[in-house]
Amino acid sequence: RRQSTAYQAAPAAPPSQGLGRLVSAQSAAL
Picture 1 (spheres, rainbow, N blue to C red):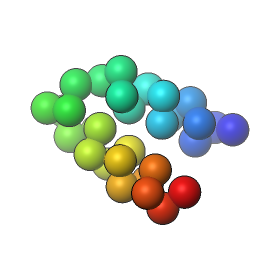
Picture 2: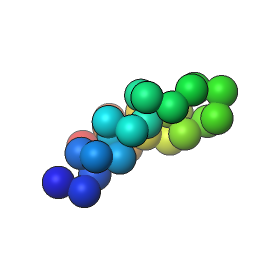
Picture 3: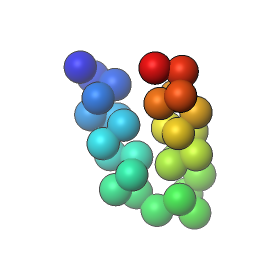
Picture 4: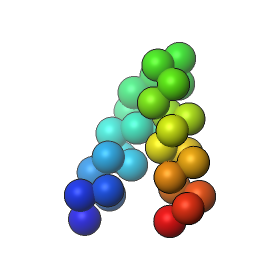
């Protein structure tokens, strides 16, 4: 459930930060 929060916070943050890309990779692994 902790990852679920991080995944939701990723889309909220701007992709320019690079965090969205990292989350995208994790989402694919999930």
